[in-house]
Image (cartoon, rainbow, N blue to C red; front, side, top):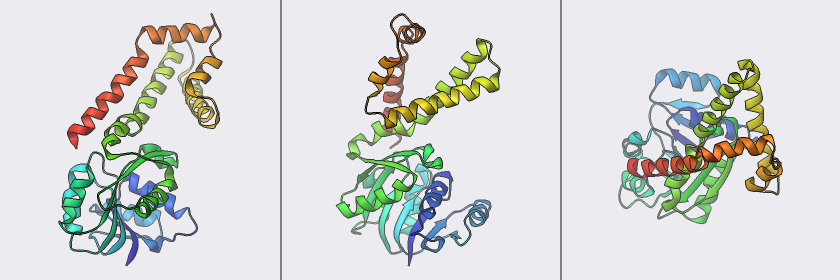
Length: 263
């Protein structure tokens, strides 16, 4: 029986497979990916030699549901006739109760729900997890070990998963929008586009790295680079006047509400 099986072979599943195989303790033969697209199956088989890529589910110790949210129930019903030890879902907005029901009533299968984000593709993901009604401490630790291969993992109550979706799940798009704006601002002020792009990208990377490694919080670091009456103070005054802070807060809340609606 295969150790870990993925239903869905999209980008997030690919990132997890790559992260797991980077650990010398795992071999391609430990993993199996179920993917409906023949083209995608061929790609994954070429990308990860020795990885079993199939079109149908089989028995497994652990099952990772990596389909689109609207395909989760159908996928799990198809897996219902097979032996499954645990289930980890990375499908946005699908509640643990929905997953448990789709697996079939009376089956005591531990379910863990996760909300990763796209930086997992480069090993820098931010993921939150919560356990279903049958999930024990060892099941959550299992999920943390898997998802920790592509970034950091936080535990939250399921009631907060929509907030996680609004913050870190959708968060990379907010950062990309800031990057776009910085590049356009640089061009507007005379910089060549390629120069503005490199400077904006490195500025975001450097600021995020500094924040992650510093003992100081974001507010303290912002104050540290804001001299009274200086250029940064002038710029931040404009951002506050334009309501940028409140716009981000409203955006996260809107994404959280939409996540709840979709769920």
